[in-house]
Image 1 (tube, rainbow, N blue to C red):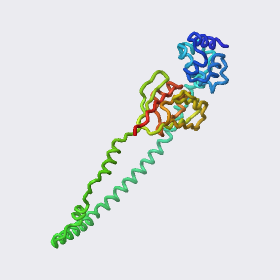
Image 2 (image 1 turned 90 degrees about the vertical axis):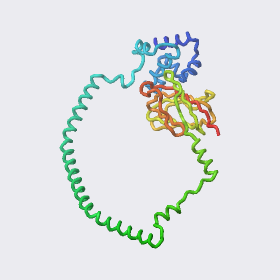
Image 3 (image 1 turned 30 degrees about the vertical axis):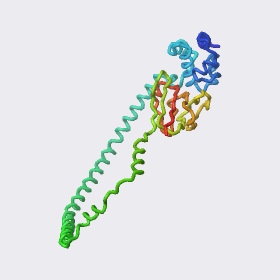
Length: 299
């Protein structure tokens, strides 16, 4: 057992928490909690999740995560981003800037030629439109004069112009009572709403209203570890989703869903086909717990 593992275990025991208690509080599998205390990180989904799970462990037992990470940084695996040398990042940045500048200068002559060609085409089009426009008024005047003569002849013979006849024939029929009731029901029906009502650290609570059903879909844009619990705190699914994997659940008979999202930036949550917007930035807080309370729409 590592020094970090001993420290975390002592803090857990000081809170009088068993591993089962801590699993229920953090929603982290018991085998992962044991791995953290023993310093055995091979069973974890990846380095990325080691840091997220340790942070959650610290918060559950009352230890400051930032201090723990700093004092035991030699024992905690680093993520890929932490291992990139700063000097290498600067060299790559300068290289990309110089290459992009060269490409811009090479592209300028081609851009000027293209603008010149477009300008010439526009000038030709304007000239041609002017030619056509000069001839159009004469034709329009002849057609208008013919229409006036026809209308005058009809008036002289006691006939109404065609436009007036059509206007009189097209009268609106009053709506029936059934149609009016249908319109009122349509106006009263509101769209489903999914709003965040409370946020505490990594936990956000949402309320789903005006919905006849509660269908949940988790779509992975990259590797992500997820857990899904129902109202009775029963585990419906727990595991690692690979890129483009999806999991669907019909929770219409439940009043609450508890989601543990290991990598929020790689996980899209859809409720009845509509994407849930994370209240807390997925890049700022990687591991998030999402609670969705569902109130079925009254008929």
